[in-house]
Image (cartoon, rainbow, N blue to C red; front, side, top):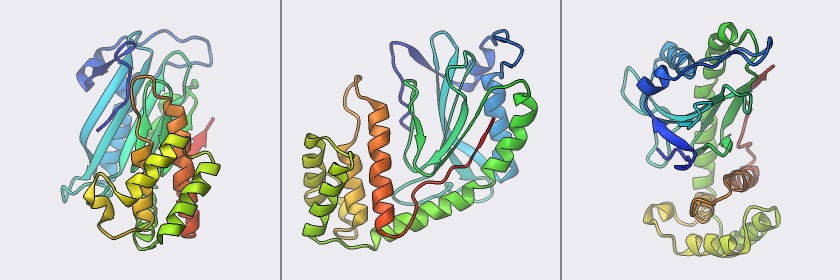
Length: 265
């Protein structure tokens, strides 16, 4: 699925290994260690109550076992079809958490989700974060269930936005003007701008031109230009630039590309 992690500081793990990880002592009277395995189980139970199951999953932990990152691709348990199923994209949940208070517990939903161990954590549809306070174990199941109940609506919103992009034709001049606007808003470096324009007019992937030259073509050209390259890639910068592209294109069709799922203290 594309979980990003550093082979120098992190390692891929499965659920069985996560369940065997030691849980450290509390760092103070307001800190409550919340096992990563319990967090994943709570998310899975909340999904199950909605008729959703995990079709595919990936997890990584830091070598000191203090931080965990993961991705879940979902499907409906009754039909077997993917959650947000589409020929072009699928909804994915991203998870993260820590025992050392470096990062809060978090969950994101996106058609493109960046979850990696350099603390980049963003879904292009919605996100949730919550502090790991004393009552997190009692609070988290209800918080997750309330949060995940919003996901079908969020996926529907994203589908509507993507459909509008597909049906919004752009001329060559309009495309160039949009790319320049995105560049001025900080979406691209100069080399990325050149690559995005090249990908719009001569895409590497034929399916990007399935509906002709549209905002969907422009979006795919932009994300192709923003793809990470090498281990030294600044994922925070890619996250920010991807958000600029998504927000700007959504505004062009009168939509918002992102909604917060919620935030708890």
